[in-house]
Length: 304
Image 1: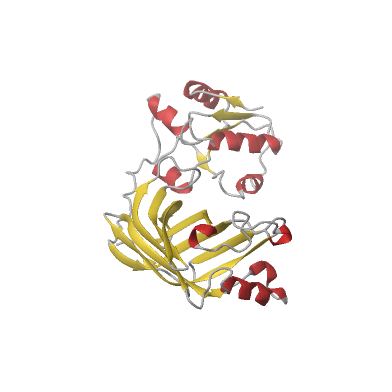
Image 2: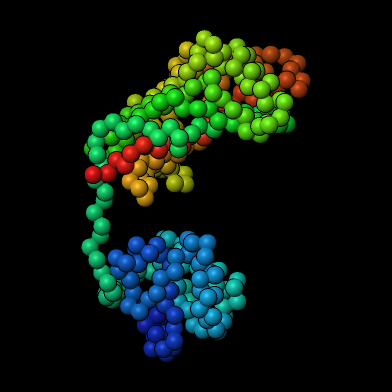
């Protein structure tokens, strides 16, 4: 089991073991902005973390000290556990990381000023319709089906460097079912979905999700950082809808957003197979919850 150490112990180790490998397991860009003197970088988030180290043919008993950003961030603990499972027997976890080192009054190497956050171009940005997608998942008692709904058009509006409003318009005449692709049942199910049992696409060929306002989401689970307040229009019925999403910029500077949420389809008049409205459905029972997985990406970069 690895030993958790303090800045003072790390200094002693470096004196006692000149061959100590000091491993910074943060992102390369964070390492470039400043790191402990003599450290080398191997990001623990990369799937090749161990293979890259093994290429160096390190002795399994060589002392290795790993560190990350701070005690509250688990990258050094994860790295130490990976090294131990790989057979390294002399692993030290400098759990306090960069923050503890600086707080102890010690210097860093290659300290660069923090990179300025990218400037966002305010205004309306169209969606990339080839890269944006909406996946639907529907379930009955023992099975489920899933597929995609084509996006007809969409845009996001940036104000003060963040998403302020937006819209996604779905083309309900272009629904596919991925799990039945290539089978005779595919077209049968799609016709069922397009009928008045479900989306009634002859009368209501579009669905529309509008984003009316947003707020930073500090309490959202996982990587979700933005709460979207808007409305969903389906079968001519509009209801308010609030969802939590992960939003950010791609390496190319495009705005990206992902979210997964469920709706109660019966609120939009889709009653087929609902146990709330019919008795003795047997195998025709269909879950009222319809899951939607949304990924949208702007067509062009939104950075100046």
